[in-house]
Amino acid sequence: MPIYSPLPPMPESHSRSNTAQTSHQFAFCGPFVLALLFSLLHPGSSNAADESETSAVRMPVDEEGLVVDFERDIAPIFRQHCLECHGAEEAKADFRVDDRDTVFGYVFGEDLESSSMYIDYLISEDDDMLMPPRSHGGPLSPAELALIRIWIEEGANWPDEANVVQSDLDGSGQPIELADGIRKGIDPTDAGLLARVWSFQGFLHPATVHFPIALFLVGGLFVVLGWKWPALGAQVPLVCLLLGAATAIVATMMGWSFSVEKGYGSWTKVNFDSELFWHRWSAIIVTVLSTIFAIIALKSLRSDDEAGRQRLTNVWKIGLLVVAGMVGAVGHQGGELTYGKDFYPKAISILLGKPWPPESAPETAQESESEEEQSPEITLDAVPTDSTVRLDTFAIPIAIQSPSVPSRV
Image (tube, rainbow, N blue to C red; front, side, top):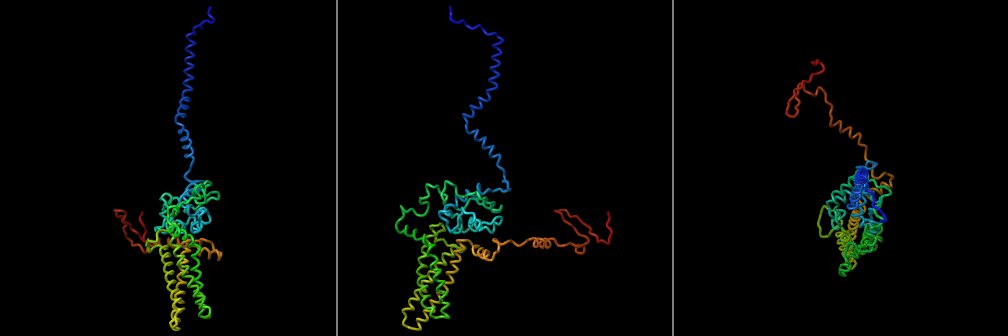
């Protein structure tokens, strides 16, 4: 006897109903199963959908109605192109692009023409003034320049919480693990001793350039004082001239090396429209003249002829006055190149308690006067009684009658 008996056959109606129920369940669950399989085979599709939803939320302008956002649009440009030379680690020309107060000394919101960072540097046609320099990937692309321009025209909004330096970068915009590496300049492992010494001494230029300036100015001052007190106009100007000429030679050599190292362009370039060109060669002229007058001064000390000695003394003293005036102009020009042309006017405005930048004069009266000039009053006496108004190619006669003549309707 079998342990179990086969199940009785299922009724035909019941089998048909189960089949229909299974079909309905598959029809209901089928789309979900297919969607699950598709998501497993194409995982990026869900991310794309999320990104599309996120991008759909982004508005053309922010809550303040601004098109350009500093942290999203401007900070990456500063970080990529400017921070290496104008960061906390190395602030070239004492300009830090990561410091808002420093940047706003060169950028004035809603005043593009007064924003020297944009006008004098970013879009400069002078390669010596162009920032970033061509040796460092400059100039900026048209899209980047357009963003900075719109940012300035919209008011140069820089939120307090926005930072140019990211947490994973050092002050120069480089990854932290590369902070101690050599990122530019000569490679000390490949350069020779002479090249390394030449590059090294250029970094001393900021410390030495003030010596000849001060010595020549003090020497010129004592030449003037010597006109009233002759004892003051003898030894002090001579010492200032000799020391000033020696330090001028050293500072000039360091300046030429430092300019190439910092990306100011090669010394072989001749551009008479460049302010930096004239600054460089004016310094050369000052150095040459001071050296010549120093030689004349030494020669006057060795002269046995009293009259000849006096003539040579007068020559080098007058030359010292000329050199003092020239070095003052060259130093002032260097200050403008370093700190901007508004540096001293801004200081004077602060001293006098005036706002900076200067407030623009009200233009309401000027606009009204210009409108009156452009729209002169038309009287009936000045208009002929019968004139023709020409519209495109059609001539339309118009009869203008005086008030005394009744018009016809």
